[in-house]
Image 1 (cartoon, rainbow, N blue to C red):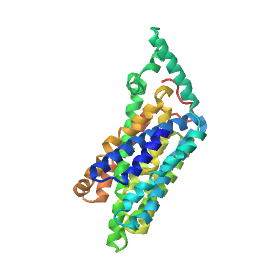
Image 2: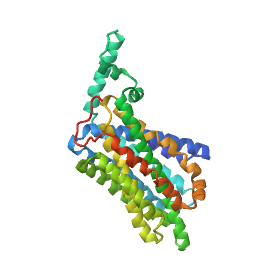
Image 3: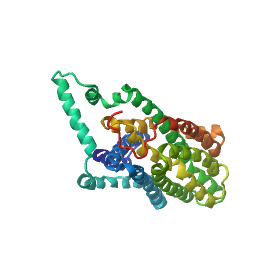
Image 4: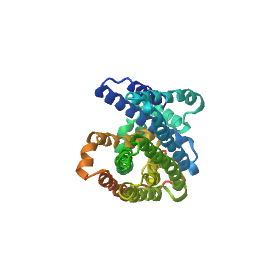
Length: 351
C-alpha cells in the first residue's frame, strides 16, 4: 500500500510537466494503476483489521476518503483554476502531497494478522511442495497463483463473475453520470450568463458532498439491513435519481441539491465494494479478488472520455446520454441477489 501511494503521488506530480498528450496519457495511466492497487490493498487490510459486527461501517468510513479528496480537489480548483492557462499543471503538482502520508502509515498501521498467518501457511505449503510431499487440497490451494485461484474453485469463480457484473454496473454508470455533471452545470450557467467555471466547480463540490454522506450511510445500512438489500436499494435509487438531475432540474441552485442527492446513490454506492468484496474471498486470495473485481471494469470505462463528445451528440444531449448509461443499474439490481449475504459473519478463510 505504501508503494502504491508513493507511485500515484509521484506520477500525479509528474503530470504537471507532461509535454504532450501522449506523455499526459501515459502518466495518467500509471496513476490509475497505482490507485487501483492502493484501493484494493487498503480495502483488504481494513476488512481484516476491523471487527465483524461493524465491518460495514468501517468500510463506509474508509471509502468516504475519496469523496473528501474529490471535494477538496474541486475546492482547490475553484481558486487554482483562475491562475491562467497553466493552472491545471499547478493542480496536478499539488497531487504529490499524499506521499507524505506514507510516513504515518509505516509507523502507525499494523500488518493484517490474518494475512500474516495465511502467508506463513503458504510458505510452509510451498516448502512441502518443493520437497516432493503430496499436499492436501487446502494446502494446494495456498500454493496456486492467486489470480488463477479466482477461477479454479467453482464457488469462488461464481462469486467473482457476479461481483464483476456489480462492479461493471457501478463503474460504467457512475462514469457517465458524474463526469458529465461539471460541463452540464457549465452549460446551464452559460445560458444564465453566469461564470461557467465557477458553477462547474460548485456542482463538483455538491456532488462529492452527497457522495461522502452516501459512502458512510451505505456502510451503516449494510450492517443494519444487510449487504444484499443495501446494494439493491442503492442501484434502484441511483437509476431513479438520474432523471432528477439531468432531465427535471434546470435551475442552477436546485441543480446543486439534485447533484448531492444523486451522488448519495451513484457515488455513494461504491462503498458496497469495500464492504462486501472482502467477505466473498478467502484470505489467500482476498486482495487479488478485490483488485480484479474493482479494476477490470475500469479497463472498459476508460474508453468513455475518448468517446464522450460523440456519445452526447448521438444521444441528443447530456440528459439522454446519462439516462442511457443509468439503465445499466438494472443489471446490478438483478445480479446482487445471487451473491451470499455476509452481514456480521467472520471473513472466510476457505471457500
